[in-house]
Length: 278
Image (tube, rainbow, N blue to C red; front, side, top):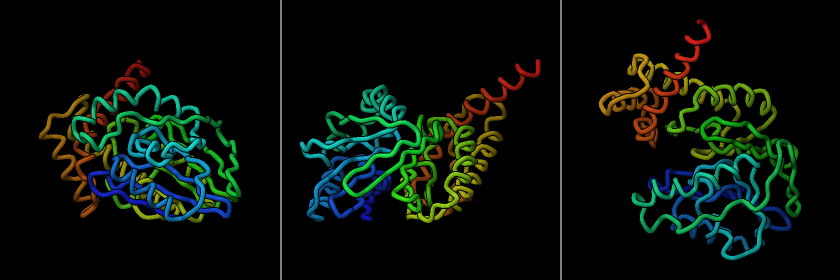
């Protein structure tokens, strides 16, 4: 197992190379072009054929530089069908949003998955077998956990962050909590979880992620007071409180940028509950 961890500008995202006897399978690819080229160099240093690329979810920091990794090779890029659809539908909007920030570090175009799988479908790439487990919306629109071989190793994408603050701007913390509930049962027999951000860990990280999300929701709920929005001062206050909850953890700025989406989510949930009661 080989991990490429991007730097702070690349959101400390992990991309993985799984080395088998017959070749190498990549899981995700970095956000920035410089990291994508370095990831390709890491592959070439292994001296083995790239057999395929697996994508965990449709956020650009996990698929943006697949083209750099492929370097023109005809290789299957595999994702759950919901992940593939979301990447295709949202990539242009993500490019318009983030290219002004990242400039030449943002690829001119994306390489989309060219093979889709269903939930619990397995794929054989050389002597390596992976099985896709769909956990639906959570941190992103759709999250896939890829189980390796007999299931003792899992690549969980952003289902759980380990020791870093979390991306919240998709505003799906309620669905995320439900996904964690399912994952704790489904992944109980897994020995090692390779996460999208942070060091490899064990399934107990799921409980830590739940506590983090519950704290975010409580903090945002108190700051918003039922409103569907937060002003900049309120969002910064939420971020400050979460930094006290998880001191010295990187990516704290993600909290402030995502707090308003959580406020909108909580307000919508309250409105829906009130309508149901009526």
